[in-house]
Amino acid sequence: MNLKSALSALLIGVTASVGVAHAQAVALKVEADKPGAKIDRQLFGQFAEHLGRGVYEGVWVGPDSSIPNTRGIRNDVVAALKELRVPNVRWPGGCFADEYHWRNGIGPLKDRPATLNPNWGGVIEPNSFGTHEFMDFVQQIGAEAYISVNVGSGTPQEAADWFEYMTTAQPTALAKQRAANGHPEPYGISFMGIGNESWGCGGSMTPEEYAAQLRIYARYTRNYNADHPTLKIAVGPDSANTGYTEAVMKAWKERNWSWDINGLSLHYYTVGAGWPPKFAATGFGVEEYATLINYTLRMNELLRTHGAIMDKYDPEKKIALVVDEWGAWLAPTPGSKEGFLEQQNSVRDAIIAALNINIFARHADRVRMANIAQMVNVLQAMILTDQDKLVLTPTYHLFHMYVPFQDATFLPVTFDAGTYASGDIKLPKLDAIAAKGKDGKTWLAVTNIDPTGPAQLELTTRAKRAVGKILSAPKVDSVNTFQAPATVAPKPFESKSSGNKIALKLPPHSVAVIALEQ
Ligand code: AHR
Image (cartoon, rainbow, N blue to C red; front, side):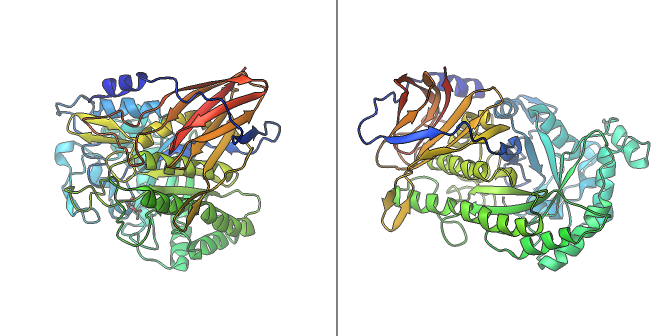
């Protein structure tokens, strides 16, 4: 299935779930007069690491490929990603970033060295997708660049040279090299990650050791493009561990004039339990569904915990908490290559995405950027590819439905979330966020977490109708495949008001995103 047929399959929808509220309907109200923080569009960022078939095959096929491409970058993937208005792409890793040497990835393709990717399957890294190809890619999809520099096995000089190469307009030797490689104009790099998981694959540093490196990298790694500022993001906590949060924020508070940062990163994956990840991506039932949803909701607590530590050092919330790796990390697809982190993507993943984005939105004053892991063919991907074929995942559709929330203003919603119980696990049955969009409309996203029954809601509003899309699925583990690409696809949703009420009925395990219209 190509992108055109994948998108046209979505149009074959029916108006879904228009219902009359009955006596047990959950009352819902949007508090339009209590606007909160901006839901920064950067919360919808993506992550493209040199890992498995994420970059090679998923994005880059090379200029000589029979797969339609523009300067080596797949046209179908670019077209699909443009629809998502991807705000930023984090690259080149991940763990890969701390072993990446940028000079290997510039110059004529034929002259680039083959190196190794020891983190991810020990495969050959051809270095065909380097700085210029990445910048071409983000420009093709209309995103901003988030580049992580190598702190683990690189040097401050190497990182400083990379930023000079990319950003200076002065005729330095590095700028001349960039021009000779086809880009005389300086690039604009919006975000710089100073290392990745320096507590683990990025060098196994203690918080204090990392803080010492951070001061040096943050000092010497400069953006020379005054027209395009770069925000610097430090490595922060792994899940609930607070050591890095304390140490980096303390170092920042005690900083002198010579260095600064703008963000602190948090990594938290929805794994379920134990390591390596063993929850199946398909063929699961409601118990595993509930376990993973429960696990993902811990994001709430993590943001509260790390947010409270940050408040101690930074009550003005100058430093953003940047959740630059999040999403479901499941057992790999049977038969896929070891270390390639390939997994299918079900309606459960879409619900995981909705719940996390809702949590980010509720913490939007501090959480101003996030990157789902990852973009194509890796972990909780937007897109799966097989040679020239492409399939859009339920997570892709969820991100597409949430586009109106980019840079929208948070509005509180009052409702009784109720309870869905599975064994010992108790989950909210419902989740909802609302926002005033940049289009002036009030947008509401409602998730029925319950996989066993529909949700009936009654919205009190002066609006005449609610119009949007609903993402539902026949089964709790429904996925899209190359053979059946639209099993989980959004369908039109509409409900008209009666008096000052609009009835909304959501099928089990579904998400609706609607605009309230007069
Ligand atoms: O996203 C896969 C890996 O997960 C990243 O490379 C690393 O940062 C994290 O542990």
